[in-house]
Length: 307
Image (cartoon, rainbow, N blue to C red):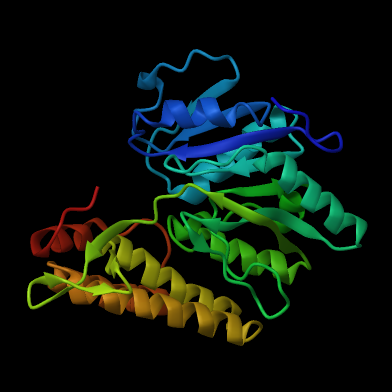
């Protein structure tokens, strides 16, 4: 592990789900910047099989799929028990550039010196896509991957909301941290590797759409993901809309554009529309947790299968 500012003890937490072979390489790279890595297998019993032999890698296997928020909370608890002061959160398909942790710690130290209350530091871009900024210059809605979170701040803000299961867990945390007076700070000129989803090429009369010399794509999500994205977005708007009207409006607008774009290229449009309708309904009713099995069955009959 490379030298880091202050007396920080950084432990990485990586939730896994059907852990890919490439995870071993990512973990080896991360270990050059952190003290240890906690892998939380979210009910798939697939991580131990990868054969991690480094004693700095700790695998926790959850008995069932409890969602990303639960996996993160379990990982944070394990990191704290191991003496961490900071937790680096990563997805199983994301990775960080050399020196990222050192630079993130430096940004957190600078923010504290200025009298700010940072909850964590985030990269300026992920997968080549720049992080949007809020009106005050802080990261608008940073994704979970690549966050270096201060455990002191995490203890004050509280654990991740497990009722959301997946999607918008990071967004809800950003809003709740804001409510407690915390903000994320940016690590300038840093790009983490991150898979954003399935890109589907845009076509016109059967030919790829090319603008500015680049083929254009739209992001596709399976119907069950559409359900979670819509439901949890509605829940966030209900919880925080009055306090953060412009924030929630901006996020809803961005999400709506992505979903509409996905509908244009989806081969499972009927399933997508069903997921959209149920997501809105359950969000308005403040229904959380895992997607109902009955809805999954209907989505599977209409389109692609959910895992």
